[in-house]
Length: 220
Ligand code: CA
Image (cartoon, rainbow, N blue to C red; front, side, top):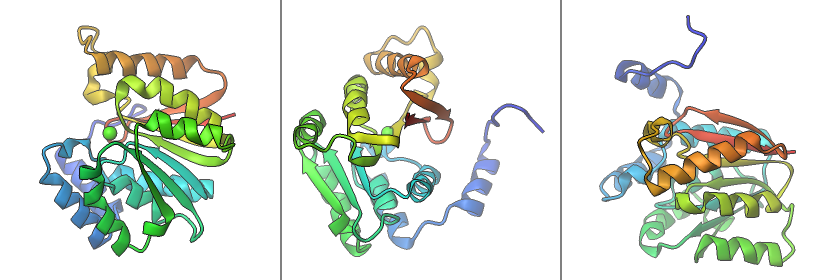
């Protein structure tokens, strides 16, 4: 028994995967294809994808924004549990990475729910604000360049409805956020965001130690 979060050794981690993660063969295949890429570490863990999909269901979400799509695994996880007329707007700057995910979205029958916008995410988010989409989204997942996290935060907060949920990936950054000697740009940006969220009374938060740290932020 413990009253703090467990450290998972390999045996316990594999138990968790084997007894909770329900990946479809298509999801597993996309993860395998991505593992062969140079930037494979940018992909979220399968238990995190499933957790996020559960949150989509719990929220009864219809419209979601994703900032940072990479090869499309998190998008696949979320799009699969959206209703037929649901919409996931994916922001990314890389055709090369997102092209890996597209055929998987097609095969899963969710491509029509995914609106991929290849452009700097701040431009896409600003365009949504300008188009009158303020408070029109139920959820947002932010997993892109860390130095822009604070900028993505303010835009997404505007675009979310009250009671909407933001999810920030990598908020524990392999533990680096707790190492005062690490002053690398991305680490500093994540530390700044974490401190900011902690003090921000517009939202309720929880930093969940799943994957590389996933902070849940509910707009009040
Ligand atoms: Ca990430």
